[in-house]
Length: 150
Image (cartoon, rainbow, N blue to C red):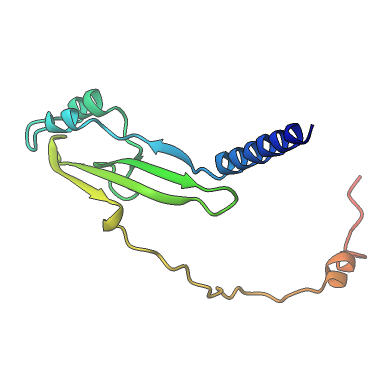
């Protein structure tokens, strides 16, 4: 009887340990559109057109804000461990730029190491007007209503 209790306890502890280790394994998710290297090799600067690029790589992940002739193909691998903040482990950005004749002008590839961190500013933009208290907001319109014309 005593050996059964030891065996049950061992199996229970081993099961809990396995469940704990499985729960702490990272979840990896791939996001975006990463073209195949063979497809990228088929794009020739000065020869390939927008249609050729679309046929080979598909539609871009994004188009540059101020220049619709710059296409971005963005892919990212994110690793999440339990309740911690997700961490980007791999990122690739392929920039394809087109000239006025819609031919590939530039094709460049960037990796995670090429990125630069952006520090947001905590400054506040002042606005015109005055700040109202909660009571002024609640009771500010009392007496302002006029009778509508009949």
